[in-house]
Image (cartoon, rainbow, N blue to C red; front, side):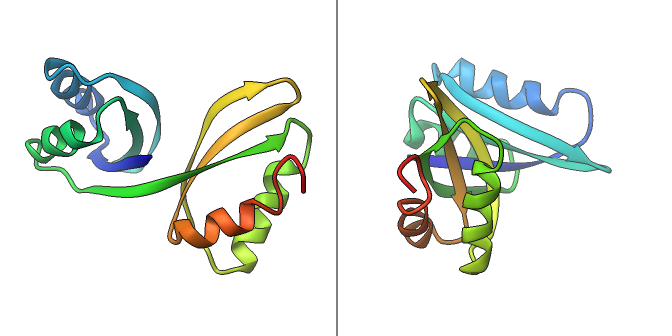
Length: 131
């Protein structure tokens, strides 16, 4: 699964334009997170149709990066995210975005969007619910 990282101006209507563009094409947003910093911001979006999303976002004239997301389950307890993030940092992997994608029992599923998805997958396999 790929995440779309979209850079926006920090102004009223920026998110609306994305939602309207995707919605008008029948593309469902399955997960979204973002924040602003000063005059700009970035949202991370997961949708029901990556190819259609790629095409739709291309019509908006925004900077969009499409990066593979790696999911892992972590214990729902203090320190589990820190442990996973520290392992990635020690391996030189930069986290571009994280998204919660679900919960089951005592575990939370997190999607990591990073500079190196293959290495992320390898590292997170050792720190997940079993690590």
